[in-house]
Length: 427
Image 1: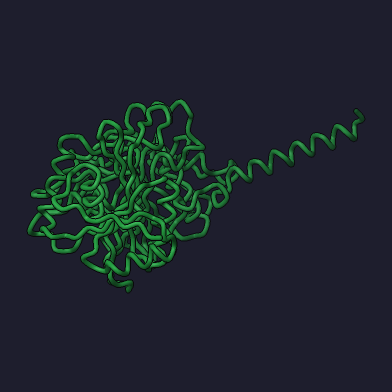
Image 2: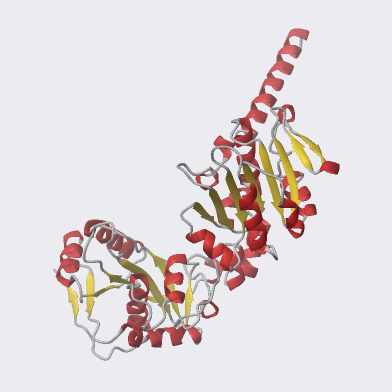
């Protein structure tokens, strides 16, 4: 190889290295949609996600972007302890120092607990146990990591809100795995908070296969797994017919190694009668039963849809999962439901049911089956489970449409109806 060819090869190698480095630090290219800052006016972005989701990387990259764009100059970094702030948020593999290329990397001064960027932006480090150190400083931005696990989370949050008083729109980023607390509930319900939810499995391409296999075996069918992997808030409501401890998880269709044979699969529909913004949802729940008479809630396709949209969803699901029957409550819009489904496919078997007893009377035996561990959820179904665990007989007035559809599906699979509705097969 001539000298000229050697120089050309070295130049090509260097250009390739620079391109790869540029791609590595291009967050807009590498980030998933649920890792990018939400649009619109908001004060707090709450990322409620399972372990391994990439919360730390999201927090660090977001701050890097905001600093570069001049959106923040005085930043508070708050973690469970000062050690955690240093080892995770600053020096960690996905921390602030490592998400910057070398020529952009800020100056970290551990003895002063500060980080300085070339454009003058400064971040100050705080441990949650010393939250009173927040008295006095003022900021235009804050990143709080694992807020849900802080022992004095409400005190820290209150102090921080008093500190966020610089700039035109001071903002706060919170990255945390959920734990049930009043503060978490308040943040989720606040109109000033934008909520992003995610699971460990959103980031599966960046996690070791052995790790994924281990957590599947150890945690996937547990309440702890629902919280730590799927970021579910496992709260309990006094007087509710269902409690979180009654809901167990197994994956009959998705875990090939332990997949039971399902004898039947049904889809239950609790239809809404209107389609405007304030309409109820149409409940659409898919459930199955195996040869041991163990029931599984497989999927939840509920939502606010036009009749055409929910009809298409139901029919697609019917054929995708090879269901054997569609259960439809006909107290409201019975003819509409029949006509909608008939328009898609006149051969699908439909079973009409009518609510002749109160909601509690229908739901109570199904809740008892949950207590007996005869019903499992194939995966965390957040909104459905929240409706179930918030339903207080005699006090809950808003119709829990997903829960109603669930009750009809499991009644069909597990209980003998007092009155067998007639099975209709069009054609």
